Image (cartoon, rainbow, N blue to C red; front, side, top):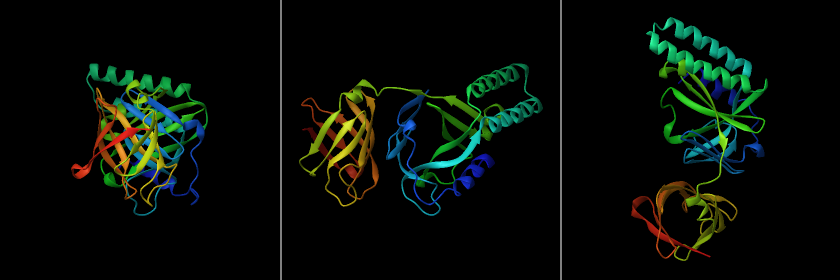
Length: 266
């Protein structure tokens, strides 16, 4: 694990035990290139993975994916990292073309840092129980006024990429997803939810593991009239799903172990 990510994880352990709500300024759908972040009051959906908001980093075993306020950084700290990167590039012995491209990358990073406020920023981080300890690269998110940035740490990618900071734009949900907005119900399984921009909030429950008002499903487009995402099962955990919009307007779901069911509009 990167020493910077390790420091971030250790700093996160100092936060109070009481889960802290995420600031509402984070709420919305954010995008930078192929990176998509969706933030609600209950979950942080990080590139299609639903991570429940727990406020602080887990200190023991946990299941699924969780999101929390991690450590902190500042414009000054990231600027110092940039200077270290410049020094590393000079010592790397790159050919002229590679050196020019690396310096161009650092110039773009400098421009991004120049636009930041001289404040401290708390990271919003995610941790997936299935991926603990994997790789030496990682990313987290910071909020500067009303703007979200994705901050990447990847020392193995080369000195010019050991720190990346990219602005994210607040965007609307795809039309294919907004077309599903509304209430849906399963007569077979006796549960339902209201979809809004790909996130579904339970309106009827068939399990003690989730209640009305909980966010229990996330969908994103896969192709024309097909979707993929995650949904809470009766065990209270998110599981991967694939969905097709049928000609009669129903949604056909396929889950793990070949489980299949339909949802109808209410």
